[in-house]
Image (cartoon, rainbow, N blue to C red; front, side, top):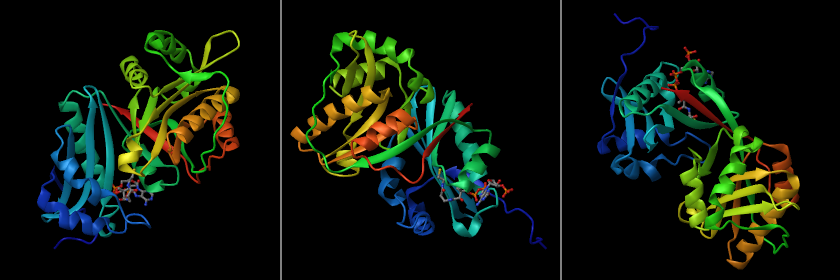
Length: 297
Ligand SMILES: CC(C)(COP(=O)(O)OP(=O)(O)OC[C@H]1O[C@@H](n2cnc3c(N)ncnc32)[C@H](O)[C@@H]1OP(=O)(O)O)[C@@H](O)C(=O)NCCC(=O)NCCS
């Protein structure tokens, strides 16, 4: 007879579209507002660089996790969920290990993910799995977008890519951010070619000091408009001291006001001078922070 304490046999496999009913059911009450898994399920199962794994016990789906291959050597993990009835039995541990094994086979060298600072279950699990906390971010929001006057901020020109990249390499905030930028709720390594793309798409703002040197950089992204809230924008990366950030965000507010953008999601690494500047300009601070974890694989 199976003893009460014995661990159930957990099997992990690639998700099938027919798993959706069981998965959506156990995700119904993940958070007080529900869950986003039903919204992304079809896309996750279809995309070439995405993979969803499902854990089953006696052939019944009891947990999921998702990974996306962002660059040849980096993967992003998200959507770890265990049916509340099957928690603390090793389900998420088994799926995460499978994700890491899959990522390794695909040639990835590093896996990352984000969790809320108050998610003790996830943070304990990650520590046990050998993930290290590499950076802390906050998501601030602003809806009253008023016209502001900036002095020394403007869009970066394409011929300024190299000088912007050099200033980034020497930046304390870049290192504090673990060299990462955000799109929606997903963090990527900020490499030279990424900066180049932001600049080409006119989504990169700089701040010049009195000596004509770059001492501030802000990257923006508008994917929030199609994914989260119409007529919105986010900051993907903010770098600079209090004064530089204040001026760049005034410039961004001026742009948003002219472009009729109604909401700015201010994503930034948790660095006091930047947070203070954002608060001063009307951004609301969050209750929790976002912790990005990393594991070499
Ligand atoms: C986080 C979550 C996926 C963990 O799933 P799980 O299948 O219960 O995790 P495991 O059984 O593999 O846990 C492994 C270890 O993590 C730690 N852990 C898991 N849940 C914990 C909790 N509620 N409190 C403290 N530690 C916990 C323990 O050290 C545990 O080992 P132990 O049970 O032997 O002590 C699950 O709680 C969940 O679905 N939460 C809601 C969604 C969520 O927060 N997802 C993560 C977003 S980043």
